[in-house]
Length: 291
Image (cartoon, rainbow, N blue to C red; front, side, top):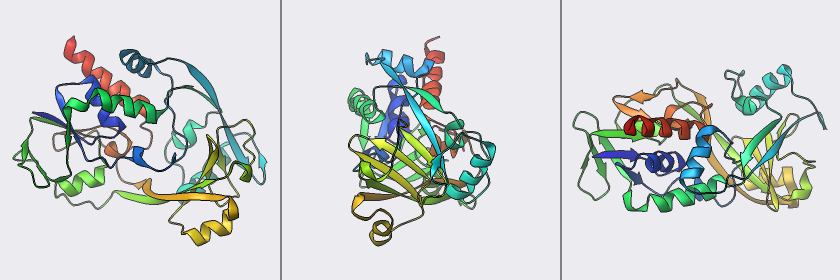
């Protein structure tokens, strides 16, 4: 039997294109947050168009404008801004071109949100979802252990869960992969003048990025911030907050591990991987199978 490890959006996309796989879903994906954790879009590419056409979803798209803010004013992008932003947001020098959305000022995205795409895919894949938390993976025996369930045998396994979590399930030592905490603050729209930008990269503010959503803004701060410290920053404009161990700080990116294929940003430990890349890889495997 072929399995996909992880029922988040990467696992759902791959599972939709490759229906010989069952999806191991623990229901603990980022899609279950109380509010949108920063800007979430589906960029318009050849592969995402194919995915939406298969699903018979609307291909309506729009342009998103991206801003850069420094010293209390909006500025144009520069290499100096990029370097200072990397230090501000990650505490280290910029090491990849995908930082700050590859420094673009505009991007074309579908009207369909990632959350709605996720819900639609989960509905389409519902007959192949296997509920339960994975407790161990035995690579030599090719078995997957679930809580209070008989171990599952696999012939092929695609992992879409974070690589450090996979290492732990496989009982492999992790000495290089490091993640950092991010605090997401939901705040009133009046707190920050977004002009006509949908998200803004910031220097000189307590937060390093801020994004516009329906009826509120979301500011992203490095590290774990408690309610007291957030209130000192945002005052009565603070509406809610969540924390995620979501920043990839160190470690080598991979495409496979011990015969297990890896798919997705955290699974491959590669900050440059987006939904569009997952769609491309999933579609490519599908086309090779039917060729």
